[in-house]
Image (cartoon, rainbow, N blue to C red; front, side):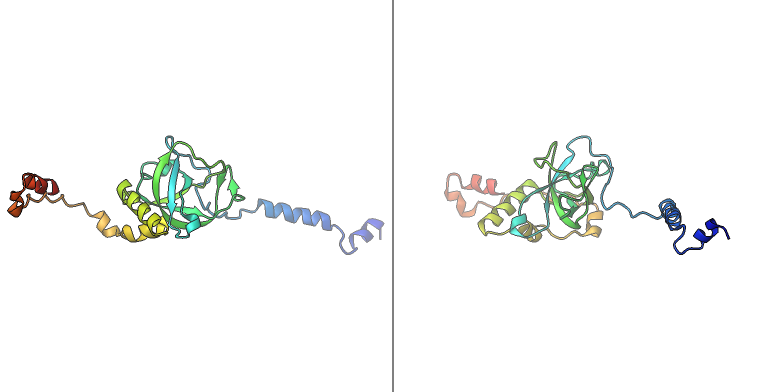
Length: 204
């Protein structure tokens, strides 16, 4: 028996070559990849690509706005006042292609659209627009902010009570025509005052 045959019968002979073949086969295997958790590689909105969002987190240290990138596909629906879903709690280390990814899905309100963000790091993208119907106007937002500041609460907690939960069936129905304004009340005893009737008309 030749020396070459003797070496081939030894335990472990040819192991490096076999491992290399196994690695190559695994590398070339068509392994299904998980879908991206956010809008990885998606184009951003051409104008005002930053959305300032209030996340539905009642903790006081989270009582602030957070900036998110607006994907081009959500540009039309992502308007101030709508409900959105975002990834929250990704951390600064989960960044791919200059965009932050990961975190759990939470609800929130889109407060405003901006051209730039004050945050210097990577921005996560809006995950979805729950409904294109604006439900949080500037007046309600200012009132909720005043209530939260007055009673040492968080804005998110106040809005949970101020904004009714979404009803998809009611939202799908066309809005009824607004009722006509009521007629001014009868002056009654206010006629004794020079500006009494005008005062009642202003209240109406």
